[in-house]
Image 1: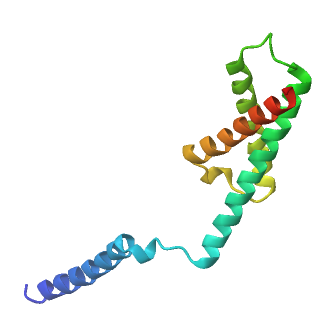
Image 2: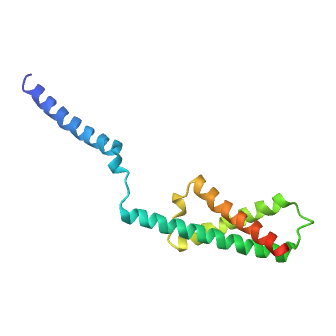
Image 3: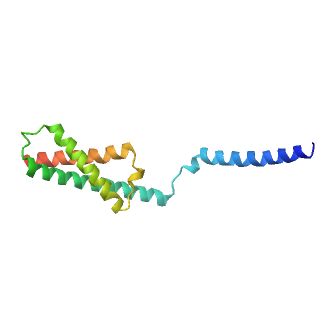
Length: 130
């Protein structure tokens, strides 16, 4: 019995040590720090996302001007919803082609890019109306 006990204890200590190391890796702040290369990549992707959304918004504003004119016969919130839905699907096609994974997008990311699209579309449309 004494022979089996040290083996179990030795085995348990070894497993416990590995378990402690794996949990310490997860909890340590060093594990979540990004390398300068990863930070640069994230920054470039953010700039590209912003540029694509802004350009789509400007295009949507120009299209709204030429198709709807002053938009008197259409309710304003319907135009915003249509622009948001159409540009959402356009971005789902564009981003993978420029090596940006849409699978990593969260709700916050989609809200951000769609806000930019709608904002730029409305600003462009209003400027063209004046």
